[in-house]
Image 1 (spheres, rainbow, N blue to C red):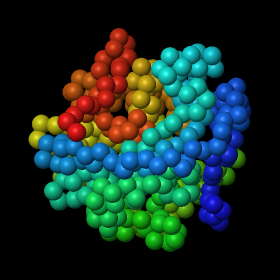
Image 2 (tube, helix red, strand yellow):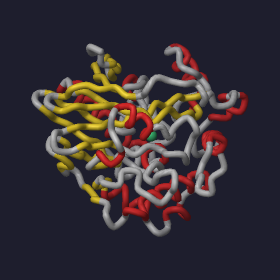
Image 3 (cartoon, rainbow, N blue to C red):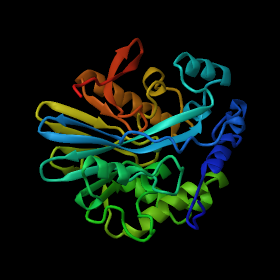
Length: 328
Ligand SMILES: [Zn+2]
């Protein structure tokens, strides 16, 4: 597929992953030897629905992403990381990131978290609207869109395939003020290394059509009844998460502040290459995990294994991810 607006494809991503200095030691992982995308496997509809108090929550998949496994921990030796992944039966070359969009029926609003990557990023993703349809929702039904941050897989789906209409035209769009300001800075593209410039170009192309209508949020904003944004910076400068509360149940929608189903829990101080401020990302991750473990709060995070809903249980000095198991 050749598109004039295509900003980055898999080869570019793998090039980024192999880039010296930026994302670590991917070249040692033999990425170039991987076969092509297995994009043509047909899958069951990618949604999962459950009740949270009085609310109905549906996790809707945008598909999956493939990035070099080395990016999941940039401060760990190649051999140590490979043996860690292998011990968990994970691919040691490619990290398969699932994409769990949280859709919340509050009774008044239909709140969607992030808009996916659309057709612009990787051919295995861009299935959000298709899966929403299978789950019984039209894009026009969404009244609020909350953007956790402006990485490609979270905002490049802002416009539809005709590239001029908002994919969720009736929704109020909400993003962290700090996130918006950082990506939209006049010198942002120029300030980044060449291999990360497409991220800034993509963020700006996603924000520009709605810049005058975007709600720029700060910590503590109630976006809908029972849905409160909290500042969770580190992965990106203005990353936001959502706390959803109904009845006696509470769920953290962590976006990429908790970003790997094993590493983020068992080694929250390992530093994923895509974390912008790595020290701050570690502090934020630990704060969120401790909050969820203490309060027995449900966690949903974007790249956890689908449907990406579970708990953080304390395990020694760190945590263990406990996938939720419910009636089907
Ligand atoms: Zn992401």
